[in-house]
Image (cartoon, rainbow, N blue to C red; front, side, top):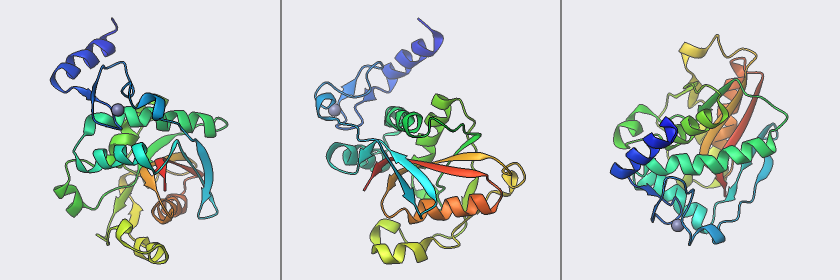
Length: 217
Ligand SMILES: [Zn+2]
């Protein structure tokens, strides 16, 4: 048994792997449980956000994929992130096979929200995708204003709500020039958050930015 696989089994003994869609305990070799497996249909889509950036996602934000996102966000189920990231990685490989990425990054949280939640779920997904694609991860963005939560706002107010909220992490300002970036998030609804992040990254010198989200509302 390879050391990586052995580690997976030992860690599953203490923190059992769970089906991302229903929460049932599964073996470390499974991606979801036997009951959810026949019901899960990936629907890999590729679409533009803000008319400029391509985004891919393996699922629509309905039924079981929605349950997975809620479980990741609110049940502190960090251990389902690697399984969700498997689907996202497949989506990236299928949709962006002509591109190679230099950096994987994620939508950041404001420090006040970070204190309240155990994880930044987008960062957890990005870290797994980075491992799967063998592309380094970096916290390229920072959230400088603690704005209202996007999902509580009507769609026409979401663009205004995210304007000027993100900026580039000074640490990476110079290294970003000419790079192709893969930006990760859990759900895409109107695309306002992702397109604002893409804008900021390109303004700071990124050559291209592509996005991946677990599901598309
Ligand atoms: Zn299940």
